[in-house]
Length: 116
Length: 115
Image (cartoon, rainbow over all chains, first blue to last red; front, top):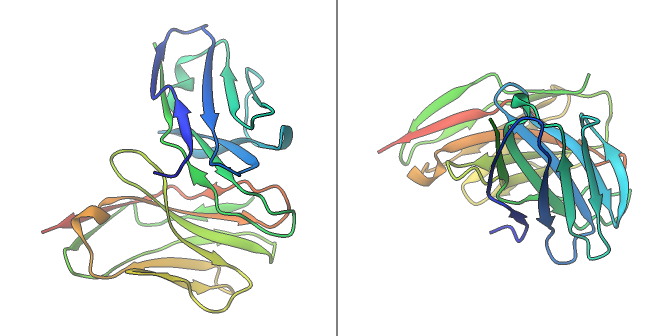
């Protein structure tokens, strides 16, 4: 158990719908990262938040957005869902000691999203 | 482009034997960190080992060790005394030390372990 929690574990929805994935980082971790794992794209970085602020963006679609709240949990919002959005979405967290060091990212169990 | 290549889609090993998984990466930066993550059938991503690029000494974690060749941009994972529980997908990844800590992953190697 990494200490990172994600809910829900599974989500089945229809095209055009909107869903919210939730992540609680490890105690003390300030950074949260979102990754998408799909069969055709592999593991792709989506976005990073640090202490409530967006720090880095990757291959995140405009239909997707995220935020990190004062209690440091994060939510990933996916809207106007398409079949191709079906994937495993991981949240990871790290303590983030500062810009001069790289911290290990610990992953949650993932949310499996199926768009029908 | 920054990429990670795992040229072995699948590897097989017998219990108690040793296996080496290959990984090469491409970056023009000199300050970065390398990782191996394991993804068992449960789909959880589990850290196996971490290597700082500035360290010449290869990292080890119990039965897991790496062979880090910075000039060749190679980062292979050696698993000794393989166990049935080692069966999983193994992903090689790196992070640049730029303050934007996104992991760049390879496509993974599936490790099969037979009794």
